Length: 184
Image (tube, rainbow, N blue to C red):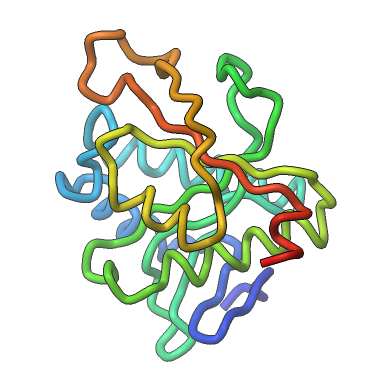
């Protein structure tokens, strides 16, 4: 196994490995996992995203890490940090996000890994604020945002990469400051 960047009670957040790609493609092709994304991804596009994640971690030491279970080292998805796209109304900023295999939902893994990523953002990167966003209708992700101490800014926006009529166009923006993190 690649030396993990972050270790939690049950998880490793680590660099991507070739063996992760097939499972990641399965995750990205799952209609339930991708319900709040514009579309499911082809294996080729999924691999390109994994390649980009791997390169960013190699270059910067952080990004969307591959997440595996400590118990058996099974790859279960990705959780991590990213610099937001320049077209976003709150850019430049650092965002947190997650995407896990459906078999591992409801067990607290996304929350556990996201907390570790926030700790890294504030302690290692020294960022002052981390944001998260999702479609207004994605209550499941908003619940995780709340669980990790983020607050709804009540500053919804239209995703710049989606048509305004798209069902996912209206996005909710959450954030947490370093100070809020330290006080939680």
